[in-house]
Structures are given as structure tokens and as C-alpha cells.
Length: 328
Length: 119
Length: 119
Image 1 (tube, rainbow over the protein chains, first blue to last red):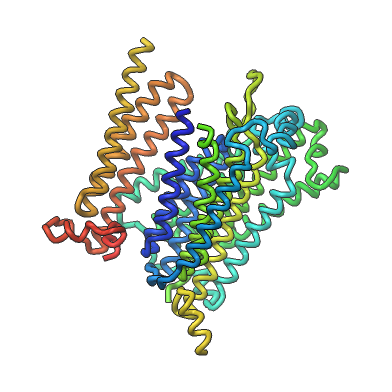
Image 2: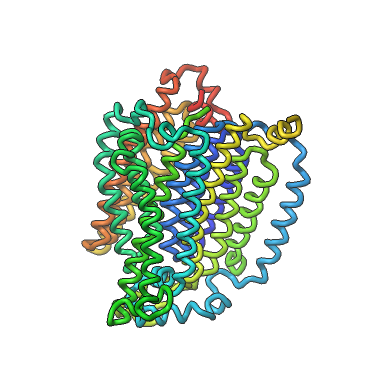
């Protein structure tokens, strides 16, 4: 009961925040509200039993997306020009659509219904077979890494393609020596601010450590490659904000980041190909070791590492691409 | 109480409509991308709502506890990867918006169309 | 013993909740950025100490209590730093900390915090 009330409260806040994001004309405020929206969404996911998704939404939606939006705002405009009036037609059509969708929801099974069709088909099999076939407690990781490994491989390549795309779009039109490889030596970050500097330096190692914990504890608790990649990227972005972009690029040069993007995707594919060479199917980890259960575990750890490396490298490359571009 | 079981879906419909409205009606390109992100989140909310089983917990199997109900892991996996794809898409969109700003000097859709017609 | 701990933890959590409420009201009603920040920073120091202490009493001596302690330390380090960074940014963007009558009226707009940060 109390859970339902809390959920209703959070969802109401969610609607209010969404309206505020659309209504405000200051884009900076809109981006900040969007961060709050993502955090509320993460809290909702947590109440709905999706701990892994909540962690991902909090790290990526509320953290990294906000940073990328702010980087883009610095290069474009901070205010929206007032939209012309007379959008009533749009408003009307959208309201009718919303009303129809609300009407359609009455055909759906209510929240938490154990007899809903979603819970009848493959999900019980996953829950039943994971301890036997994989021997790991977190079913989400098992489904992500092994049962639906093709899907995750596809997602990794989407991230890979997006990273390459952003780098192409943003590095065009700027001299290679200036745009891509030499950050502004004047950018000092917050180096002259004592309090953020001291606290930040103290926190960065722990953020990265927590990221590694999330990476390697992903088989036993909420976590995994996607979340860990985002958390480690957040730690490095914090370092870049504190010490200036140049020092961050000294610590992790662009070539290393690109190597991470490519290497992670290659590691994932390599594990799949290794399965083929050892006589199984593509992405069949059971053949990696003599014991199929251990083989599955090794496979999942390896592909999660590949996912984490690719996500971390991509997000950092995208961040640096936005940060290095000059406003004109 | 029975009706509250549909509240999540109503919020999904409303947030979905808000995001779609921003994508269609707002002329600022960054506002459109924010609307798209809201739109996406609404879909995430619908999927995660479907995974909940009454009395269940997160699908992390605890040894030694018999008869424990677990929520459905499948929608969670789909949305977990979708969130990461969402941020990739947003970054790609923002990169293009930055280039549009450099080429046209504005990120308002009507002004971009105007300068295209006059040119 | 159980009862004493329960009562103590409920008292702590309720006081913490009250501080969150006070901080929220202050952040809405006070006249300018600095005073608002002063009210809002109450939530991430005093309130979080009280609430987490209350939850720790519920958790007892367990791994959960140690995790809560780590969260508390993290919040105590980051919260005040964030407040400092916001106040510093406001000062650098030329916002006058002196609160005379003129700024009070100006701050009563719609999305005022952003306006002030920008001006």
C-alpha cells in the first residue's frame, strides 16, 4: 500500500517536471529539470523492482546526458526564442491521442498482475534456468549477457556507431592539430577553487573504484558493463572539470579512448568467435571451458568487460568532442 | 484501489503526449531533443511497469529462500540497453544541432527554413 | 530495547523530514540565490544526517549500516561542495549578495533561479 502511494507521488512529480521542461524558455533550466526528471524516473524504476535499470538511468540519464546537453548549450544558445502562438491544433491532436491511449490502458492488465501475458512466456524459464545454466544470481545480467547476447552485441555496436558519428560530425571543419588533438591550454577547469579541487581529488578515485565494483559485482547484484562504463566516465569527466580538459586528455589521450571504443567491441565479438572456433555457436559460452557453467560465467564476465570498456570510451570521446569544439 | 493499478499507464500516456508535443510544436532544436528524451523515458516507464509482479522483488535470486516471487527480468534487459542507445542518439542529435548552429547561426527551425528559402 | 531503538529512529527520521520540508519552503520563499542556497543546503547536511542515522538504527549492525555510513560520508562531502560551487558561480556571474528591497521583488518571477544565474 505505502509503495503504491509513494509511486503515485513520484509519478505525479514526474508529470509536473515534464511539463516544466517543455514550458520553460531558458534552455539551461530545461536541461537541469531534465536531470531531475531522469532522477525521478530512476526512483520510479527502483520501486518497480528494476534495480539494474534504475542504476543505469541514474548514471546515464541524470549524469552523462546532462553533461552532454550542457556541452551543446555552451556551443549554441541558452535561450529559446518565444514560439509563435496558435499551436492549438497540435495541442488538440496530442490531447486526443493521450485520451485515446488512456482509454486503451483499461485493456491492459493492472500493475503487478501475476497473470499478465508478459509473465507467462519466456520469463519463468529464464528465472528457472539461470541458476542451473549460469550459476549466477542476477537474472538480468544472465539474460543480458548470455540468453540475449546477440541483442546486447547489437547495442554495443549502436554505441560504437554513435561515437564514431559524433566524432565525424564535430571534428569536421576544424584543423586537425587544433580541433582534435590540442585542447585549449588556457582551459584550467576549477583549478583555482580550493574546495571543489580538494573534494574532487578525494572523490575521483572512489568514483572509479565504485565503477569497477559495479562492473565486477554485476553478476551478483545490480550492475554490469553499461552502468560501470557510465560511472567510470563520470569520474573522468569530474576530473576534466576540476583539472582542465588538457590534464584529462593527458591522463587518457584520445587515442586510448578510441582504442577502448574499438577494443571493447572487438572483445565482445572475439568472445563470440572464440565460441565458434571451439565448436559451439556464435556467442555460445558453454564451450569456453570444460565445465559449461564455468564457461558461461567466464563468457559473461568477458563480454560485460567489453561492454563497459566500449561504453566508457564512447561517452568520454563524445564529452571531449563537445568540450574541444570552439564556440563561434 | 483497482483504478490505481492503471495509474502508471496513465502517467505513461500523459508524459508520452508531453514529449510528442515538444517534438512537434517547439521550434528550438534543443527543445525538440529534450522532448524526444521525455518521449523515450515514457516508453521506458511503460516497459518497466509491465515487469512488476505483485509481492515480487528484483530478479536477483537469493539462495536458500524458497517460493520467492521475482519480477520479470526481460523488460528490464530491453530497457537497460535502450537507455544507453538513447544517450547515444541524444549525443548524435546534439552534434548535428551544433553544426546547424555553426552553419546557420541559429537553432530555431523557422529561421533555418527561412534562410534556406531566401538562399 | 527494540522499542527504544524504533522510537529513536522514528524521531530521527521525522526530524530529518521536517528539515527537508523547511529547506524546501526556504528554497521556494526566500528572496535571492544566496539565501535560497542557505535554506536548500540544510537538506543535504542536517536532514541527510538525521534520516540516514534513523535508517541505520533500523538496519542494526549489518552490512547495510556500513553502506549507509559510506553514503552519508559521500553526501557530507559532495553536498556542501556543490553549494559552494553554486554560490561561487552566482558570485562570478555578477549577482550581488547584498539583499536590498529591489532584488526581493525581482526574484518573485516564474523560473527565477535561472534568470538570476544568467543576469
